[in-house]
Length: 246
Image (cartoon, rainbow, N blue to C red):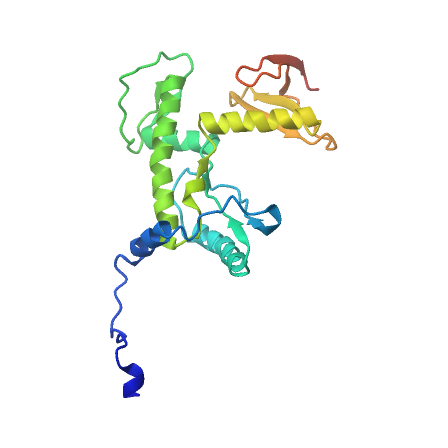
């Protein structure tokens, strides 16, 4: 027993976990442990395409539980010899983000309000009436708050040890995501894979898209109006208003 243990490091009686997550996160990043290899052939790749989490609040134990299952699958396929494509994205473009900004800063979007380049708001207090601000100011606050929330989310996932390739991080807001979405949608139209229209809800003053396969029969509610793309130009597509659905 003495010969076997000679020269080996003794197991400590107590284990300190302080700084352990940051240590291994840095090690995995430096060693490119989870970096996706784009040179691999398609049949060698296992791609994980999960809906990106909505960046509109705080993560909780249930969030971690769901992503741990996905991470276990990613690790299994890596150990099976496959190249795993496992990015992380942030879904911060939609009504949940707008509502979070409203509640966090105590503001609301008022399209008729003038833009204030010197607008300075702080987190709202309970019972504070909402301040009407311009659309441009509101969008800027959305971008500001989501950038902060994304950093918090990424920190939590890194401390959890998810085997994500963080160089592939994407978001559903911004110039890049808009252009990619437009290109993909126009390609679907060119292939005849989707119908194009926009839905306008007067009650919520919201405009959303509806891209559905041609084989599906989907009817708009009576209070929506339909729109169709008229131009195939990417940067400035024109819209043509159609008759309201009945």
